[in-house]
Length: 451
Image (cartoon, rainbow, N blue to C red; front, side, top):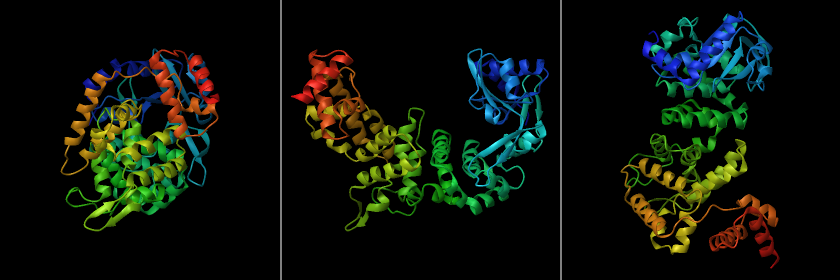
């Protein structure tokens, strides 16, 4: 399965590809080895133009820096230098062998080595493929090209040993399987299921970063199901794993339980759906695990509110910034109030339709419907029509001069009703023309607080 000529041509003609080729040539002319490695050769063999290109080299970090005038040395401790060349960036990493901490959480130190040892330290066979862009030569010591033709995810060496060195490799295996629409080698799959509890040792930040890559990548529903099936989800986000088996009203949800609904929602992602929308959709119904009840039919009273509370707890553990937690929790908290817009006064509609997160709330509503069988977009279409009519009749007010965080800081208050009133007063003053600069807005706010 050689790399197709047209894929090579298109890659090298791209800004990043041309830059990465030239960086390799500079390193080689200085007497060092330089190869594209990992995702770029893998994607090209898979008939895709790589979005990122990593270079592995025999040059030490200080030697790379000496050759490349513009670079970021932040990762120098681990042998990685981000090089800016001809309008594009590529990561250049010295051949290395890692000395991992025994807790399986992070590398404690890095030892530089040969190309052979660099290949041996990589996680999966399909990520240990090296390609020379100057000659078109492939170096494939672990038969990654063959595994890629079988769409096979296989650890290099003993799977259990590799996972114990870094438990995050389990999430990477799941993500890679979804990315290449692949399957697991039996020993790899067995190791994932056996060692899934080790994922509890991972930091919230590392879990969040890997899960976000899953949500932004292809086939997120497949990866999420794999995380549940292997037990990795139970070890990392048990609140989400609990959605499996939570029944829903059969008349409205032919797709099945809450977990099935969530997976169907994520399968409907498009390029228009941003990162926060995807997180909100993943967690929007998590409150149903706590609110299940049944009388004449299955009900989940106030599940949106409970979802927001669970999001705050989980996302704090995942070490999300507070502002982002507030936003995703707000979207989940309000995703069930969409049917009330028809009866709202113009003033209340303005509050919602001009809200900075309203469009993302609408996107979550669309995905919620898309994840339901049968999918009925009637209400969504009505809201869109009313939203467009309202904007035609009520032009959007000018951009706020102060953010909610700035208002709280100036007034010395926390989140609450007073912040909302201050926002409304500032907006009204801005529309009237009483204030037009940030300085005037601050003075107006202080005078309003004193009165």
